[in-house]
Amino acid sequence: MLVSLLAFLLVIGICVVIHEAGHYLAAVWRDVQVHEFAFGMGPRLCSKRRNGVLWAIRAFPIGGFVRLEGMEDEPLPDDEPDPARAFPIKRAWERFVIIAGGPFANIALAWLLTSLLLASYGVLDLKSPVVGALMEGYPAAKMGAVPGDRVISINGHEINEWGDIRSTLAKIEEDGVEVVISRGGERVTLTGEVPYNEEGKARLWGVQPTRVRYSPGKALISGLAYCWRMSVEILNSLWMMVTGRLQAEVAGPVGIAVMAGNYAREGFWTFMMFLSVINLNLGLMNLLPLPALDGGRLVFLLGEMVFRRKFPEVWENRIHIAGFALLLALIAFVTWKDIARLIG
Image (cartoon, rainbow, N blue to C red; front, top):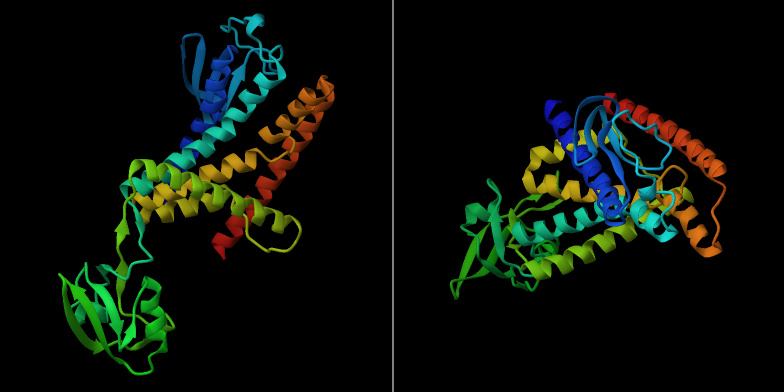
């Protein structure tokens, strides 16, 4: 439980700080006055003012915000407002960049984390039939296989790709196998039994593929391509859920905490991949054109840029407030489902 809680706080902390940093940096770039950068919601636990900005940690570590000059928030006694640098007087495209900065910062972090994983930890090579690691207690280790062996054939069936090992073993009816491998340029024949595994529903030889690390340049390109494919899958799955073609469970804070703890226990790089996926999801969800989300605000700004006039501010605020209330209700419902699922 403690591991899950700490992992959850770390994930939420990184996601929120990166998101608000995106808003903050965009605001600084467009010369908008920033009064406060806060992590968390509710009463302030600690704060420090530096260069006119109040850096604060608040009581509830869910969310955060960047308070800009000219927004609806109540000014603090020690704020020094500069109306000439207010958010509302900036051009529509500048406000668009500031609002979009948050979700795009999360997406950028997902890309960088994925690229770092590809360059530092690598990915499993599922093309070459080369043994990367042996699973303790399985037939491959007992037969004398070692990492670096290249599988040439199994019971006379030629092996060209990693997937051929499993598919060939699935065709074999007897337990006894003869595996020809290439080791140091020489052919070696390994013999032994690979019994049918009832739990795995297959004959498990007990080998894992090699791990390939990318160069920094290739890692960045491949990381971007991976994030693009994952984004398409996320949005497609969301659309299928909305249209009723896909039944899926949605995780809330409790569910994310459980997952964060599980991935943290599996190791550093597994946790980093989870952090990347969470940031990508957060960035994409925030770009959805729904009230109270950044995407909903971007819709109004797009309308302003197209039609050259602002939507009435009073009505826009009412729409966002209604959307925020629905969002809170959804979070409460999903959290209740998470707890019920956890207890069950």
